Amino acid sequence: MYKLKKFMIFTLLMMILGVTTGCVVNSTTTTTQTASYSSDNTILTTTDITTFLTETTTTNGYIGIEVTEVTKTEYENKENFDPSSITVIIKRASGSFFILNESMYTVTGFDSSVAGEIELTVTYGEFTDTFAVTILEFTGIYTEYYNSVQGLNGNELFLELRVIVNDGFTGVSYGDARYILDETDTDPSNQNNVILIYSSYSVSGEWDGGITWNREHVWPQSLLGISVENPDISVGSDLHNLKPANPSFNSSRGNKYFDYITTSVAYEPRDEVKGDVARILLYMWTMYDYLELVDSTPSTYQMALLTVLLEWHELDPVDDFERNRNEIIYSYQHNRNPYIDYPEFVDMIWG
Image (cartoon, rainbow, N blue to C red; front, top):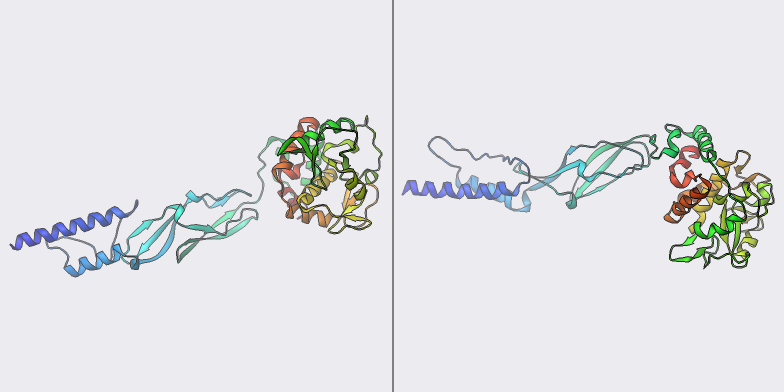
C-alpha cells in the first residue's frame, strides 16, 4: 500500500510538471524549489507541490516583464523599428517565465528622425521595461540620382544638389507646359480633371486658352525678372514652378510673397498645399544660382518668406500627389525636386 501511494504521488507530480513545462515557450523552466528525486524515489512534500501549482497557474505569480535580448541596436535615419529584434519575457515569482509574442505588448518612444541614443519602453498590462537603441547620422542616400551627396550637410549639400538638378536638365517650352500640367496635376479621382493649386477645384484638364485654368508661376514672373512667351524655354517654363490655377485666384495672388496672412503684399494659400509651395520655392532656389529666398519683402530674383516656408515644409509633409508630380516632371525635364524625394534635406541644410 505504501508503495502504491508513493507511485500515485509520483504520477501526479509528473502530470503537473508536464502541463507546466508545456506552457513555457522556448524557455527552460526554473523554480525556487527544484523538483528533485533521491535514490529512494522520495518526492517533494505536498506543501511544495501546492506552492508550485499556485505560482504557475494563477496570475498572482507574475512579477514583471524583461527585455532579455536586443538583436538590432542601430537604426538608419528614417528607418522603421524592427519588432522582431527584441525578446520580451514575463516572469513569475518562482523564476519561470513565458516569452511574449510581439502582438501582446507595445513599444513606444521610437523616433528615427533624430540621431543619437534613445530609450524605448515596452509595456504589457501593468508591467514595463526599457531598452536603448542608437539612431545613426543621416549619411545614406538610396538612389543613384543622389549618390554624390553622400555624407554632405549644410551648404555643401545645397551646392551639390544644385549640381545634381542641373545635370541633364532638359527644359520644355512654356507653350508645351499647357499640355503637360494636365498630366502632372491630374485629379486622382478623375483622370480627365486637374486640381487647381489655390482653390482645390477639380476642373477639366483640357486646355481651353486659359479660361478654365491657367499657368501659375509659384515664384512669380516679375520676381524671376522675365516675361515668358509660349515658345520660350527658360526659368519661366520650368515645370516644377508651374501649377494649374483658377484665373481669378491667380490674379488675386499676383506677385505676392507667401505668409500666414493675405494682405496687399502677402498671400496665404490653403493649408493642404503650403508644403507643396515651400518645396517648389526651395527647388527654384537650388536650381537657379541667381535666385534667393529671403525673410523680407522680396525684390527681383528674390522670394519670401523663408522662415514661413520652412515651417510649412514641416506642417504639410510630402504626399503621393507631389511624388507622382515629381516623377512625371522628371520624365519630361530629366531633373527632380530633391525636397520631395528626401524631405530631410531641408533640415540638413537649413535646420
